[in-house]
Image (cartoon, rainbow, N blue to C red; front, side, top):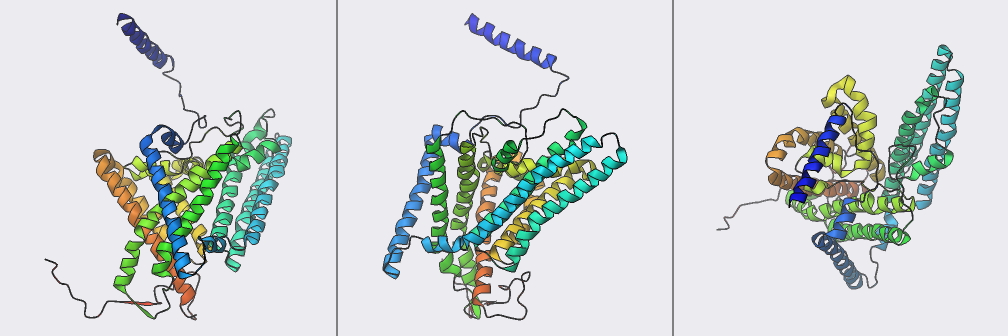
Length: 466
């Protein structure tokens, strides 16, 4: 017992000395370090979380059986959502060409970076020439980024691409643009130091595919690739694609596929359809999170021996929207923090910088949805850029005081928010598909507001159920 007390005393003493020794030093936790994703750790160590995982797998199996039975009874053949998957990834060749163009633009930045740094070092002692060279480089970078964004936007706006293929192209467009900006900010100032190394082409290529948007000369690496884990993660991605296809066929199409074929629709039918989409909407929301930020990211991290797997934190337990936005997607959050939020704080203050971050993020999400669906319908922008921003100060204090109640409130918002998204976007999509063409049809004007006409049920009365 005495020996244990001595050990505790020495531990407290060493911590105290460490505090005194480093009192005037700023100690920061490294940005990247070897660590697993939260769900990887929880599924391995918690039987309860593993059981939740198994529940989602069972739901997938039940949806599979339901689809098989429906196909046999209604069509006389088994489809298993393959038609929906093919339709979603339609014209994949055109999507691949657009991706190769984006990749080529990203590769072309590397020689430009070398030329700029070499020229800046050459003009190091000539202030006027160096400023002119910097101006030319900034114009070149802006032109490169503009081309990277403008060509896919023009092509997708000219001719609509299938939903899943368009989402892939637009997400990759933003990913490459954010990576180019990050490495430009990190490496362009190295002309000041003649000994400062520039990344090799091999490291630059590694960075383009690494599951991070923040550039570093070195990342923590694992010793080997577990190919079994890579295959398992990609199988999860494929399963979730079919999962969402089942949800679309079984829960969304029955409500909205006929929307717009009749000139009038009862308001009660619309409201009932919206509530019917709440549960499949939130399941799709959770599946999308797991697919992209866990399975897909972990697969690439394992293939590239990228040891830091903290792509998200435990956002599902939070009671404050500010913490949710930081924890939900650490990959994008880190880029917005370093390249939008921090640079703006000296000019706009913290509140102004946060507002700009929300605006930029909301616009990017809306561009992805508009180009993917083929119409502008800013439902997500209003949810995220208006109500989501307002929730940050509202839940800042209440989330600390009433964590359980506010966590319940946040999940309620997730459920109804996703139900609205999974209702309004299909309504607009099928209204444009089923309603007759009109002179007022426009990419920016919602068609579902005027076709079909939403009316109240005639002779509607309320009867006391008691």
